[in-house]
Length: 458
Image (cartoon, rainbow, N blue to C red; front, side):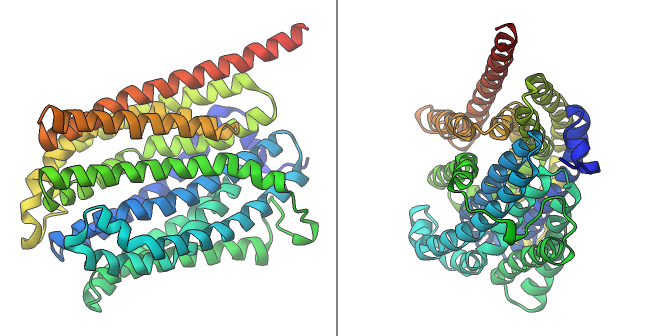
């Protein structure tokens, strides 16, 4: 199999590969979340009701993002394994299957969300801000293909180690969104609908750039020539075996957010939802180092597994946790120290000034959640990389939907600690679940290594 610089990097030292892959991923993710924060900041200027509406739409929006990242992870995993096994022809074919799936999933998801959005919002308790939520949601979900396809195509780029092409379009989309937000929301007086249009236009332009590289410039390592395409249902299945569970992981997180929003609505009302919406977006930024390193680990783990270099799997997961944990500790300290200054960006207007001390208190407490993420994220992504997406999904579901939700309910309602109890329950459940996930990946890798040693002895 012919190699280029990217392939040599991805098939070499796992530590060097993670370092090179993770930094651009973290940077692009930072721009994405910064973009979401800026959305919240501009919408916050419209008042607490539009900001709360954004909070109700966010879980549904994240489901779309989850489908994109999930199918992208499935394609990444399969292509990486073929590259590790030095089978470029199959890697090319898998990349085309990945692209076809992105189109099909985009159409299906868009139709489902547009049809069921209103009843879903009512079920979530968004009736008081339903108009704002619908104004934003209809536009965003009509452009699902632009939101969903870039991360799926980007998964193929990451599999071949071409991290620049996987991240540059995402960065461009975020920057365009940032520029358009104030223009559409305030200058053109489009309100929350302007924020939705900005969210859709940026990714659409990034998708056009990706298609230019693939179909016009044609200088990617993987070939997308449909003349050589052989339809293989097994490849669709292999992508979906990882992609669907990975997508459902985001669905689980979104459903959890819906439940948290509902519990907060019961104990404190829409203001608590607005605080959670703003504060949790900051926490999500704090998780980026761990998530970025974990995302890089998918490609590295897939290549190691395809080449049957199981010791490299162990190096991958342990190094990923180490690097991500150090960065997470630093981020946690920063958020704690500068919580008031960060909270101010969501309370700059008279309409939202009441939120500042509430958001600051939220950040000081929930920044601890960031410390657990390296263990769960690295373990889950390595499971995805080796094609064990169902295991990753089960562990994530147990951690987020069972442990976090149960502890949040117990402390918030059973022990009558209200809003504070809900947050403490999330911390307790997330911590326990993440440590369980990491234990499982260590046991799995040990099993692989012992199996290979037994084969050599035999």
